Image (cartoon, rainbow over all chains, first blue to last red):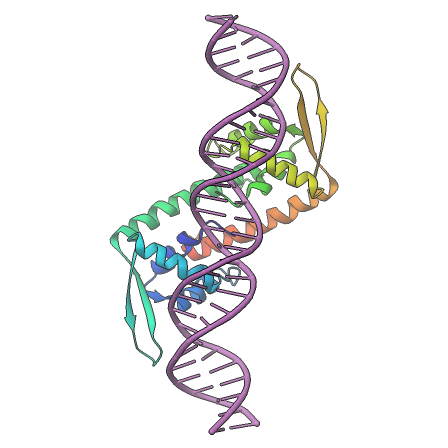
Length: 102
Length: 102
DNA sequence: TCCTATACCTAGAGAATCTAGGTGTCAAGT
DNA sequence: ACTTGACACCTAGATTCTCTAGGTATAGGA
């Protein structure tokens, strides 16, 4: 459990629109193969982000199978910036408690 | 919600034994006044850490009021090292997804 | 005496994520 | 033709974590 799922999804979408399965792969790769999110975590989170207006989706039928492609909205970009700042503050706070100088 | 409460408590106890209320203050200060944990979070977490053998406690009657003073056990030190590594890996993974070079 | 700070505790609620299932397409192997 | 595996989506329910909102008790100051 991370508590940072929304941030990860928004940040990944910041690099360009993608579908759910693709986002899992993107996060997996960009995290250095450390984060391997489950579909059962990602899809509900994307639905929630869409309901809150941070992302929007459209159906694509590119390669046979259906895909729901997500993209950041303007509000989502702001949310991403806000959550990224929150993360910086939080990780700095943890570093402070851990006593690691870096 | 952090997901890092145990790590924060263990790391704080790594600086020396302390009681629950004192740990809250210690974490508050070391985090640069960014983390302000609630008693309702801390006490159950300490009990859980004690049940799992990472910390041990004794009653102290120093200044009138009773205090339960906690200290890291050997197993707790190992758990702390493990969780600190986990945190480093996780925060590096998030940085990777965020695309921040630092 | 009353209020505040210190200090401990717990039950239950709320929220986040995972588990474990389900559906369907398509390509490759047998 | 059939089966298997990869891709792709979805949801209900369980689990886990943390917080809310209460409770108790002592000591000191107004």
